[in-house]
Image (cartoon, rainbow, N blue to C red; front, side, top):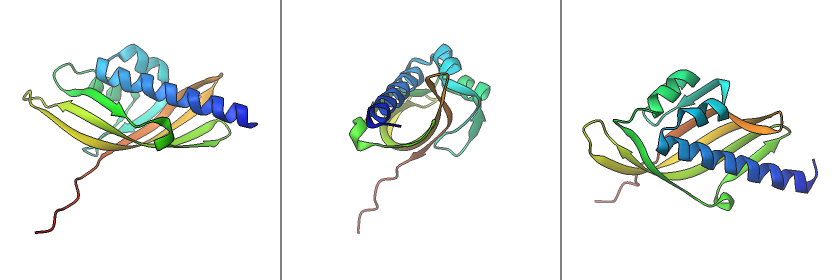
Length: 138
């Protein structure tokens, strides 16, 4: 793979992640259907994990969930390419609406795995871990 292909793939991967992030906020099941692989498995900060259909159902609930995400720049993330597989480590800042209606915010450290199928990157797995604030000395 030459450097132009690598840079092009990295940008396509990043663009795919931004579209998926927007789908989380917009609760857009059609985007998830298109950009998550058929065998997708995703985990959320609570530790619960879901196969594709349940993941879409969970993230498209209008009563709670992600209401905004702010990503770091692509250069602040790690994108590692292994032929047609990419492993991405990145941090996002989330605003999350709880079922009771209150909104909380926190950082999420993400690890996402994408594969290139027919010249398109799709996510096969993703996990978000809530970043806990550092303990303050007493």
